[in-house]
Amino acid sequence: MNIENYQIELEFDGDKAFNYVQDQLDIGFRIPGTEERENCTQYFISKFLDIDSSFSYLLHNFTIFSTECQNILFKLNEEKDNIFILGTHYDSRAKATRDSNTEDRLKPVPGANDGASGSAVLIELARVLYAQKDYLSSEIWFLFFDAEDQGGNGMPGWDWIEGSEQFVNSIDAFYDSTVENIEGMILLDMVGGPNLRFINEQYSTSSLLDELFAVGRKLGYTNEFPSNPVSNSIIDDHIAFLNQGIPSADLIINFWDNPSWPYHHTTEDVISHISNYSLDVTGKTVEQFIYNNYIIDPLFTYQGNHPWGTDLSIPDVQIIIILGVVIGIAGIAIVIAISIKKLVKKRKVIS
Image (cartoon, rainbow, N blue to C red; front, top):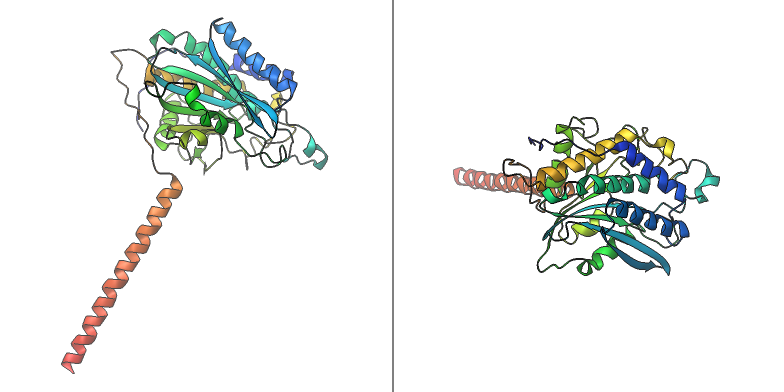
């Protein structure tokens, strides 16, 4: 995809985002139902109110197995009728189930990358996009999900992405669908580790994810947005939005088999394994993407994929290819059978 980025000085600061990661770790383990989780939501609120003391926000309370949980939504440019969502989860995992030390598998995960990194990027994006709010044609949501990371026995009986599913089930309470339109959603998950390499996440709306890759590559981040990325389908917070027909993309790394970042769901997901540069790359790419699509400038014509339509996932495409091959083989078989039948008849006539 060949695009031209809007020419503007990007203000996202990876050093500031790094500090926001550290702030969350200083709060403690942000496990659903804990005081630390509550303190973390208050921290987010304080950071947004530092940007603007009247920054609009809404709290979404829900319970999972009687545990109190809370999503937090901050809104920028509420007067606009079109909405774009930037999302992340902020809860940290209750158990380090992938730790190499079996004794540590019952300990909580610090969650520097898996939770805090995406949250830190959203805080810094709010700061830089607020400065441009009068020049943006869209409302921007900054959406922090609780209860994403407790599946797989993190907390007994819990499933993955509980918070985003709860939010989408109640989404009509947060906007007026008769006059407002949610155009798309970008999810950030594990975006702060060194040697950042984003994957081609297969559930994502490909036109949206492809555009993000093109924006990042145009900024010079060719290692972070590789031309031949690893592909995989990840159950993450964007799924609930996709199920509502909202184009969504997940910016996420290979966390299951990655020697550059082997700390997923372990006690080693700590600040020393966070890179200011990776945070900067992620933030600047999303910042540029927002300007490309929503900056108000009559002299700028952007050739992106907006509006991002629903599209076929790789599994869907593979099924179609397989069906095509099967139909093709069946067709050839029929032609051969008919030819043989005609030849037999001809031989009978000759004989």
